[in-house]
Amino acid sequence: MAMISIIIPAYNESDILDMLVKRLLAVTGSWKDSCEIIFVDDGSADNTWQQISEYHKKYPFIKGVKFSRNFGHQSAVTAGLRYVNGDAAIIIDADLQDPPELLGQFIDKWKQGYQVVYAVRKKRKENFLKRFSYFVFYRVLSKLSEIDIPLDAGDFCLMDKKVVDKINSLPEKKRFIRGLRVWVGFKHTAIEYERPARAGGEPKYNFFKLVDLALNGLLSFSSLPLRFASILGLIIAGTSFVGFLFFFIYRVFNLNVFGYSIREATGTATILLTILFLGGIQLITIGIISEYLGRIFEEVKGRPTFIADTTVGFEEIEAGKRG
Image 1 (cartoon, rainbow, N blue to C red):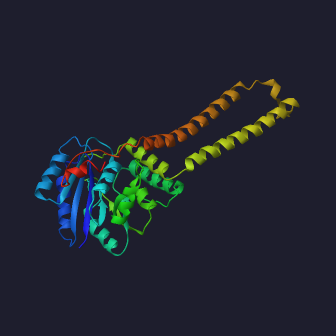
Image 2 (image 1 turned 180 degrees about the horizontal axis):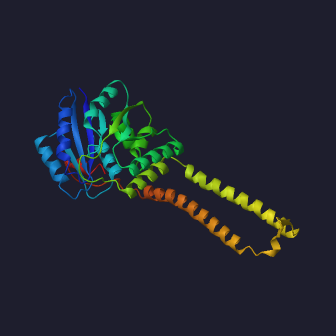
Image 3 (image 1 turned 135 degrees about the horizontal axis):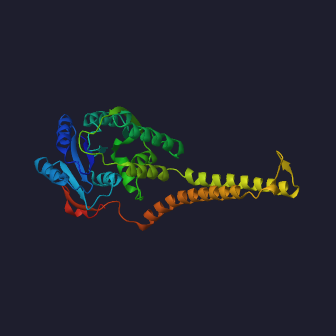
């Protein structure tokens, strides 16, 4: 009999936790395998942690980790992976956009020998802007990434203990889990599903958090933006050099082009536009370099990915070790 660990990041999800637990209990009750459910409270301001504590009293296999503040979704997933004890770990969101009823299919694929089973969203019941943003993000990431990250695949997945151990051993702090599970390798397969709308509450990923997630994924698994900045610099430098030669010859020999001579106009507007254009390119290049430099700065500081305030269902000594 195998042990299945279910990781659920939660941030202000008190409105739908009862519905989630009810569906999870219905699903896991039909399994022959044992399981543990690990909620990670990412610094919620509502009754999320109180509910998790009550679930643990009623169902000891439901456990919880409470952060000292909000560290973000990827940090919550990272914490869950650190605390699991199962032979396989499943990551699922608390908002019921990842249907618990699919977990049995994940486990079946795992028992067939696949070490990573991930869900691919073939349809999303969300607003057009969000659907379009995700569509563009995954395709840009796929084109620029140095590894083959599957299209439209989020964090909803099952990972074998061997994969979990390898991800936990990676030292980086700024994590993009769906990229790391590809980077470590092993045998992967996909399950398609239609992603429903939230069952309740408000979306926790606003525009700025989605942009941060996109940048994190892109900069963590691609050096192409840096290469792009270098290539752009070379193109502009080469074009400028050719233009300099052209105008040098044009002025020295007082050539006429379309009836105009360069000596008849000062070219102030052209100079100003050129300076502004090159200044913009320089700022873009500096911005790209700064994004990478900022991530290096975060890694060098060596701060933990998360800080656990308290836990239920785990030995207290472990809570101090696993940040």
